[in-house]
Image 1 (cartoon, helix red, strand yellow):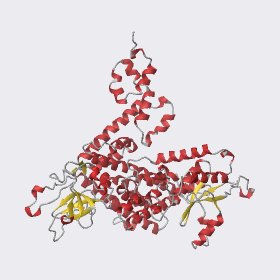
Image 2 (cartoon, rainbow, N blue to C red):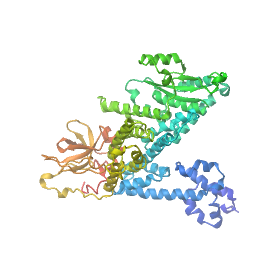
Image 3 (cartoon, rainbow, N blue to C red):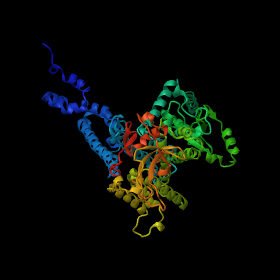
Image 4 (tube, helix red, strand yellow):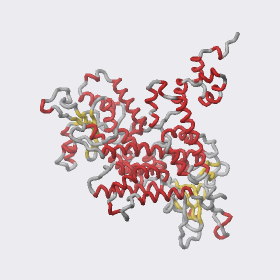
Length: 638
């Protein structure tokens, strides 16, 4: 007689269910019989489903801790259903965002409130196949929501400095606590990566895991590590990193030195060549050394950053006890992970400083540099990369590697790079700065942020509201208030209120059929064009016959501003020179390019714009040779 599945013990059935989707277990298996219903409730099964169905979890779940605790401390089936329900709500929000521009920012903000619980679903939408009807729009808006979530985690990391700065530190505060400033070095620097992460690997937790893995590989490669002195360990680590090409740059030139990728610790760790500026090389070294039980920090000298390693209190770097009166003294040594695998003699560093014209105060400069200052110096390096890209007069094709992190993503990294630098400048200021000059500089940075998020990142209203407005109320001098009852942040809050009002507003459509004969618009939304004078390529996003579409008054949708003597239509465009969608071009300067076929027929500049094109278009239509508009509410006849 042939055995049936009913003859199998529960343990075997549970093992089989590991290969069945959780949705089928819920909707089919559990309904087969009382026995299968009971087996389908097994906590171990639902723990497995939770662990393998969702990679990312909001920190409030403490998911990794749950995995280590007793199996029955968590209702795993309920937790799975909780995440499944959230995914369903996020899916409805994404569908609504793609379908209509009305309340688009509001829906993105609702998704962002789910934090990392939204990431798995958003990633799936960022990677939908090309065959999906609204592929570009779905990818773009899913990535926009994900980007805002990533930025929230970065800013949350930097906000730890505010909490640290608000505390009182005394002489007994440990070195590590004073120098880390409430943050962890690799996470504080990894926050910059988060602004340009998009749908790629390498978030803050993954950066930590990469460093843990490198430290473990080093330990496995070293014999007698526990018997080594601090100096021996420090030099062994420098040599190992150097021999494995983990730090520094290969044959840097003046241009390659300023590549954006060299400023990002996460990128340096993931890239097979591990490219990094001296400050990132020193940070990688210090982070790994700390995992090996050493006390190591970057030491930011003018024009270069070293790593400094401290001996345990009362013990020399070579393992000998120091005299009794030096029981708390720590010896230090210097290394240059960027360019050398040996210890850097103190005399060399003193000579280096003297050559820079610094003849006194060396002792202060040779102290370990606090994490907040390392963050600010990294921000300055990012600004230098941005400036180098903007001011270089070489052809665009030669400049793209300067800002490109992954193939074709250069255009969508430009604005986030500068945005990260502005946010860092705002967050790395004590809650109560000691002088008016710092307050003034901070308010200038907030002005830059207001401009930037207004024009490029209106989906971050909730982040500005959460972090900047309370800080603004603390920092702004009382004289800036027009009334005693008015908060200094009122202007920022009013700006956010206006953005949200416009977001929820139904805009009147522009119809070609309503135009008079003398105001006919020749070109259509979605056409690819070449500028007749400057010869760059771009996409037509919108048109006007009575004014010029700008972003000055509205960060979300174009408004009308009359131009005197305007006798021709103007087009709002996204162009291949910078990926911006703020350009306004007269009809006489546009020459439409006739194209037929798949995306491969598009000019390379337009291919690089594809990730941003989803803001306005559903997909590329190769048969008609146009991008299919997702702006039918505004331009219903295009």
